[in-house]
Image: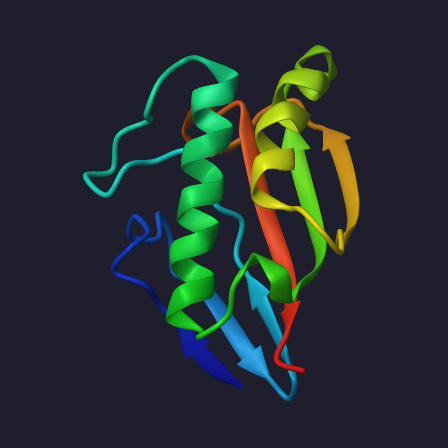
Length: 124
């Protein structure tokens, strides 16, 4: 197992790596809408989703991967009524071959974020 950390994503808010490489797979930790300075970008769910996906992109880049390598995403949201708005932003990052995906509503996310996304990517 090889821990991966990125200087293009905010520091972890706990004792974990941005992601880990094991074999031909990369597993990211969930990314929340923090800026590099450690602040929630906005209360707007679309802006939060964009920040989350930018953070995911920074982590993927540190692993020498891109969105095209992602085979599975998991989205955690605090309000299922935001699903369409999140999808709008998500669809601008994932095009072409789309990864498998799950989306679940949760009661609360770290730092009271509205959205958190984790990915699994392949080095193949």
